[in-house]
Image (cartoon, rainbow, N blue to C red; front, side):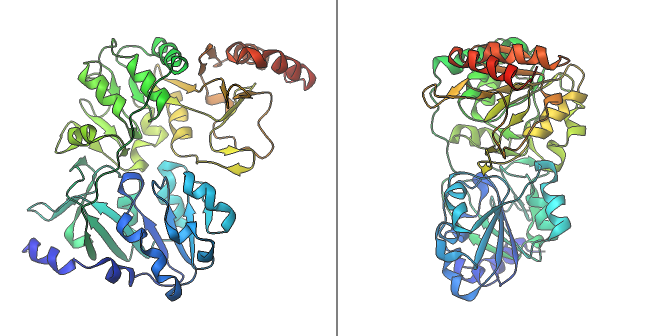
Length: 431
């Protein structure tokens, strides 16, 4: 087979690709850095030709007219399983709806309801054997490709070629759009003194030879910055971020003591800088696998000394965590938070850590509350939280009674709220 000729026969314009989308169809999209920007930028242009098109997405990095414009209601509905800023702003327009999904079941749960008619994604250029790499996002892409009637891929030479379960063959693709956009880069984070303290407290909880799950953002970067003195750490994570590369270059991460995928970094998505993407490119030490594997609690628990580090918007005095809504107003998504927190419970020596600043909005709002707001989603059950960490210390919850938990959590709340939390605990008979 002459793969180059087959490839060229499938190259089309964005306008030609858009003709494949019809009324009433389900269109599944690649995620995060691998969202199909060229097509989504022009999706609104077929508004007059289509109605009731479902666009399945999550963690969009850009804002597009097909959902940001109220006039798109009835033509497109973005079914989004992890909100970012654009989805939050557009939700009142009726062009966006939230799909409650755990990451490791995001494909299987949605497919049980509706298989995709069209998949839109990204990949790096084809190799001589006819394979393209899905690069830095393998959360549910291969599952959707396998079930979609039509597969449209934006091929971009700027994406790193990755290994693991990240390859598709040219024969699986119906249409190709060639693009050259830069891979999204996260701006440099600036860690403040409070975040640094949180990082230090968490570092004290992490033993040598632990395997880490950690995301991106200021607190995860503060944590990795405090782990440089550790030995033989490993990585089994949903999101591969810049701080993990820093730790590897410092010699703290070796992956030698991992229980599964020994000697390998394992992830299902990534976001960072060009330095990080260059590290991934053709690197056999890094493997990207499906979210149905990486985020499966049964697989997570097979890692010895597995440490899951996540955040929350609110934590009540019994240890329940809300990480996805502010009251009834949806904010983000379940993602992989719950899966890793549960998975470490099956890991010998495993630990689940919830980390956040004690307050928001110039100390006017406490993240530790007597009870979650009315309508708030319980992302993580209190039985799965081992530690909660703020800049005021560490609350150890595992095995403790409600009275003991209340005392622990009040001790790490901001001092301005401690008397209030005690009085509310008494008034509501929480303890």
